Amino acid sequence: MKPARNKFWGILGFVFFFSTGEEAFAQNKKFVVYFKNKQGGNPFSISNPGAFLSSRAIQRRNQQSLPFDSTDLPVSPSYLNGLSQAGATVLYPLRWLNGAIVDCPASIIPSIEALPFVASSRALNSKVRSSVFKSKAKDGIQSLDYGLSENQNIMLGIDSMHAMGFQGQGKLIAVMDAGFLNVNNHVAFAHLFAQNKILGTRDIVARDGDVYQDHWHGGAVLSNIAAKMPGQLYGGAFEASYFLIRTEDAATENEIECAYWVAGLELADSVGADIVNSSLGYTTFDTPSLDYTYSTLNGETSLASRAARMASSKGMVVVSSAGNEGSNNSWGGYISVPSDAENILTVGSVNESQNVSNFSGKGPTSDGRTKPDLVARGGSAIIANLFSNDGITSGSGTSFSAPILAGLVAGYWQAHPGLTAKQVMDNLKNTASNKDNPNNLIGWGIPSFIKAHILAGGKPVLNFPFEIKVYPNPVSGNEISIELMESSAAGPAGIELFDAKGRKIFSSFLRFEIDKNISKVPLGGISPGVYLMNMEMGGKKFSRKIVLD
Image (cartoon, rainbow, N blue to C red; front, side):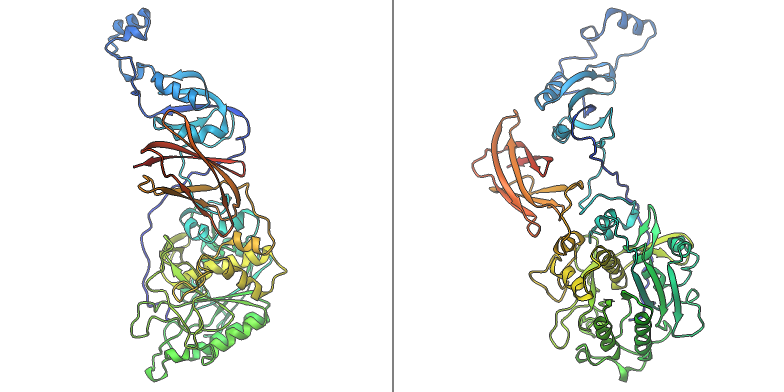
């Protein structure tokens, strides 16, 4: 697999996120609640200002020829009454702001915000969340500003891993690639040099001792593991140490590069690397008679594949790209060497929506083993732009899904240093999204730090903000599904359904498990209409407006 053959630089669009806080949700607080309009059967009209303004106020306006407008109108009395029915004490209406100051338990603010006439709310006397935010489905509280790299980190629970303090400290990762152009100048890696985290480099191809003047591909790969660019790009193991090894000659494609790869792997072993990332792969060569075939993919034929298996037996976790031949019919769409090796993590690609990328190499191996093992985002992944000193861009390929996963491996192993390399790999596979039905498109699926953490003896963490998804909505059948967007949450949950008049018409209890984060609620016999569904779990409350057709 030639890293230079796929041109993938692209233009990025920026998305802004607002974080939440939960620290003051335990007692009554004062909030301002804003309304969407001044309608709601409002009995007042600007054509009759005497109904809500004093004669002196009207006179002052008239003397200055100031017209009356909607800001003068009182807020809708029915809206104020709705706040009271929701459990809030209305202290003062605010007609100019079209809102009201209320005193209420912070825990009912989500229910208030779910009212159809409420636009938003803001805490007045504590550091409680504003309602003007976009919630994100993730495993844990986001302690870092990931910028555009948020999706690729959240997908694997790397944000939770970071929030818990596991950022690769103490781990040594060897990266084998075609070169690391400009890594010594790009701000994404400045922290590595400042902290002496680059423990060594080696150019096995040119033997000139300088890997920073060669191909850009290795630097882009490295950025998915090691980058630290607040607000733009974070790698999964930005606090790990690194050894950078050039094994690939990007200008040619000969089997000598597989031998270079083996030499690089042995070097990684000798310097004590815990993890090796290789975003390289081989299928065909400049001399066609030397091309590999599908029968080669048995983990035994290629010297690189045999070396990868050997590295695993030496206690290293080898993370290898599955290759980008998924849509190459002449190759059969299969994975590449050395991703056919046994006892390594072969990594395929999905896009930001977690759908498999069409270019992602597929299994099985020629001796019938399931490949890839796991998948991560490789479709339009966010990477450092090595043709600049401070830029980022996007790139597609399993070249980038592998290092994202390698960062997860580093943090997970740091969290559980007593695990063997095989246990690390097995735990990640046995808690991944497709573990019950591994296949040759995505293998065991998308790994989850939190689930693997719990499997290794870590305690579930329930003090992180998490979200729920309720669907379908509107509801056309007799049941609705509730999905926890928090893989560490488990336990009982209470459900209540209220009609438009605030009457409770339904209640039930559900139970969520670590491996079962979706529950179905039967709604048969309930009349069509608009309802408010409240759910309480682990001391957290959620509210959703649902419509029954």
